[in-house]
Each structure stands twice: as structure tokens, then as C-alpha cells.
Length: 100
Image 1 (tube, one colour):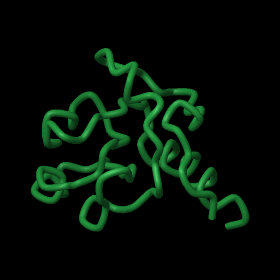
Image 2 (tube, rainbow, N blue to C red):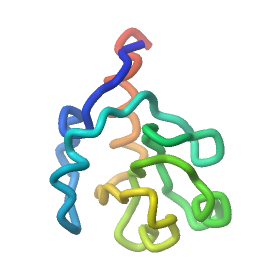
Image 3 (cartoon, rainbow, N blue to C red):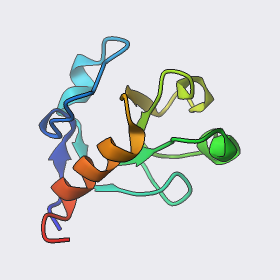
Image 4 (cartoon, helix red, strand yellow):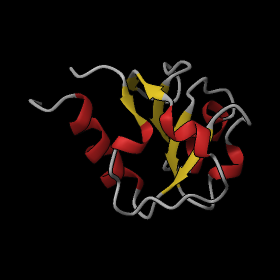
């Protein structure tokens, strides 16, 4: 597993920043985890409204999600708006676990 990948090194093609977070682009991410087990400096993913109660309490610093779901996240979690959450999650996971 690769540790401490900067958010700007994730190279998600369909990634669309919806507000200015230039300083956060240099933040190091430790791992990708689900909404429930993620902590500060982790990235997570949120693709379905059925997880909105868990999403509201996630401790992740960043979350791959859609424009429609982004408002369900806490202010401490920066939404990374993507076209397809599950495809983007796969791409990010391969950065942390390249041999999986």
C-alpha cells in the first residue's frame, strides 16, 4: 500500500472542483475508506442516498461524490464532484493498492 498521496496526485479525469480549495490540493491522504470508518486525512466515496445518514457523520477529509449528494456531507469533508463515483473510487483505490 502506498501511503500519503497528495489529493492533486490522484488524477481523476472526471474530477470537477466546485469551489476553491487550492491549499487542500497539497494535503496528504493516508487511505481510501468507507464513509463509516474513514478518519481525517482519508478519502471516501458517497454514491447513494441510502447512505446519507452515515455521510453526514463521516470524518474523511475528502469524498468522491455527485453534485446531487454533496450537500449531505459535513463541512469538514471536501466534496470531489465526479461523473461516476464508483469508477472514480476504483481509480483512487488503485493508487493506494496498485497490486490489488
